Image (tube, rainbow, N blue to C red):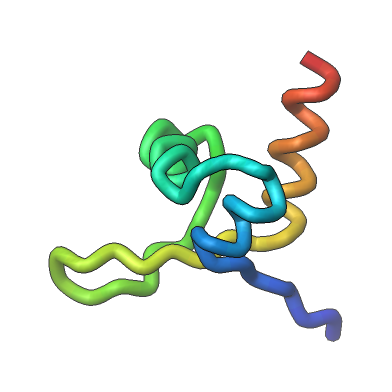
Length: 62
Protein backbone atom coordinates (compact mmCIF):
# COMPACT_ATOMS: atom_id res chain seq x y z
CA UNK A 1 0.00 0.00 0.00
CA UNK A 2 1.33 3.41 -0.98
CA UNK A 3 1.96 5.91 1.82
CA UNK A 4 0.80 9.47 1.34
CA UNK A 5 3.20 12.33 1.85
CA UNK A 6 1.90 15.24 3.92
CA UNK A 7 3.24 18.78 4.07
CA UNK A 8 3.17 21.34 6.84
CA UNK A 9 1.88 24.86 6.24
CA UNK A 10 5.49 26.04 6.11
CA UNK A 11 6.51 23.41 3.53
CA UNK A 12 3.44 24.10 1.39
CA UNK A 13 4.17 27.85 1.44
CA UNK A 14 7.73 27.22 0.26
CA UNK A 15 6.54 24.86 -2.47
CA UNK A 16 3.91 27.33 -3.72
CA UNK A 17 6.15 30.38 -3.18
CA UNK A 18 3.65 32.21 -1.00
CA UNK A 19 3.20 33.08 2.67
CA UNK A 20 2.08 30.71 5.39
CA UNK A 21 -0.82 33.09 6.02
CA UNK A 22 -1.95 32.67 2.39
CA UNK A 23 -1.89 28.87 2.73
CA UNK A 24 -4.09 29.17 5.84
CA UNK A 25 -6.51 31.37 3.86
CA UNK A 26 -6.67 28.80 1.06
CA UNK A 27 -7.52 26.13 3.65
CA UNK A 28 -10.11 28.29 5.43
CA UNK A 29 -11.82 29.06 2.10
CA UNK A 30 -11.81 25.33 1.19
CA UNK A 31 -9.61 26.03 -1.81
CA UNK A 32 -7.01 23.66 -0.41
CA UNK A 33 -7.92 20.50 1.50
CA UNK A 34 -5.99 19.77 4.69
CA UNK A 35 -6.31 17.67 7.82
CA UNK A 36 -6.47 19.56 11.11
CA UNK A 37 -4.48 17.49 13.58
CA UNK A 38 -4.41 20.13 16.31
CA UNK A 39 -6.13 19.93 19.65
CA UNK A 40 -8.55 22.44 21.09
CA UNK A 41 -8.17 25.93 19.68
CA UNK A 42 -4.72 25.27 18.22
CA UNK A 43 -4.90 24.40 14.53
CA UNK A 44 -2.13 22.27 13.10
CA UNK A 45 -2.62 21.34 9.45
CA UNK A 46 -1.15 18.66 7.25
CA UNK A 47 -1.73 18.89 3.52
CA UNK A 48 -1.43 15.86 1.22
CA UNK A 49 1.18 16.47 -1.50
CA UNK A 50 -1.35 15.27 -4.10
CA UNK A 51 -3.69 18.06 -2.94
CA UNK A 52 -0.96 20.63 -3.58
CA UNK A 53 -0.53 19.23 -7.10
CA UNK A 54 -4.30 19.37 -7.70
CA UNK A 55 -4.38 22.95 -6.45
CA UNK A 56 -1.55 24.02 -8.76
CA UNK A 57 -3.02 22.23 -11.78
CA UNK A 58 -6.43 23.77 -11.17
CA UNK A 59 -4.91 27.26 -11.06
CA UNK A 60 -2.91 26.69 -14.24
CA UNK A 61 -5.83 25.39 -16.29
CA UNK A 62 -8.29 28.00 -15.03
